[in-house]
Length: 157
Image 1: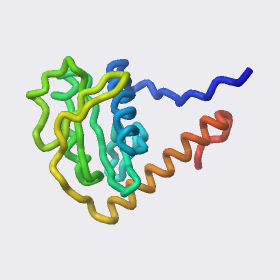
Image 2: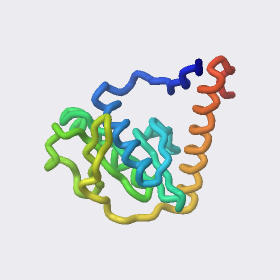
Image 3: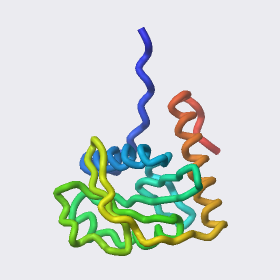
């Protein structure tokens, strides 16, 4: 009998609603050719909910909002624009869409998938910022794979 595949660790910061939205967003982005990681620390000190990169090097960040209160309490989302070519909000079907800012794209998602309702305005980040995000993405993804394969490994130094 084959062993069950290892599961990614959950860090406990996200609500069940946010985790469901993230899962649907990741499924949507994967179907569109993007590899994704969640909770990626950026050089600004912020932590992006979902970061995606495709084969052309396009970087996107998806900020997940699981409630109106969550959206109103968070003003840091504008800081993410310097780290991506496309910035989206992702919400569930219960969120009132008219409160979501026009300067970001909009995704509606649940744990089964998602749909892009609005694309964000086009922009390109600087080559230095692109390199920094791509390196953080690659290192985080490799480290997470390592921890899945070897959960008893000593922490990174």
